[in-house]
Length: 195
Image 1 (cartoon, rainbow, N blue to C red):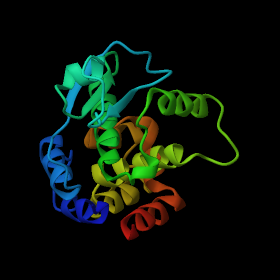
Image 2 (cartoon, rainbow, N blue to C red):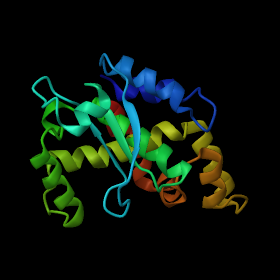
Image 3 (cartoon, helix red, strand yellow):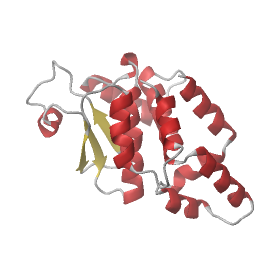
Image 4 (cartoon, rainbow, N blue to C red):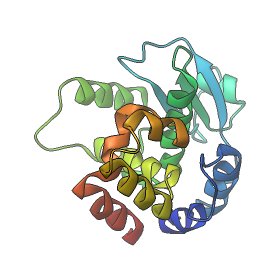
């Protein structure tokens, strides 16, 4: 279940990195038998832009997520988001395929607790919130291969590109572009690849 192998795989992909290339590779590397079903749902993206559900063996077959996905993993994305945001949310949620069992959100109660933690961050993050933070950085690493990131960083520093230009090239939300060029970026990607 190696994020490092996925990160390396994506280094040779053209940008924007295609979800049609990422999804089967994640399923393969995470050793999960099923691809997720992606559904656009009516949700308030200010509260939640998306989430993934992995129905367990003991899942209630009448639960809507289990019915919608016919027992497959389901990524729900806010319908009102634009293409770049939807793309980012799908890739970020896909990174949860690599979550260790203790970081998974498996019950409605776990999900409610995580939403509460988003609204009122805790001094000590829960394992589920750690997973959310990791998934965000993992998605950034997947969406911008390192050689391309370095080139964009140089051009951005020279004033040749704006964050919006970069967002349009990578097909990602402009709000996350500055994170690609922070001091923490390489540290976080290195830590996630080390596993």
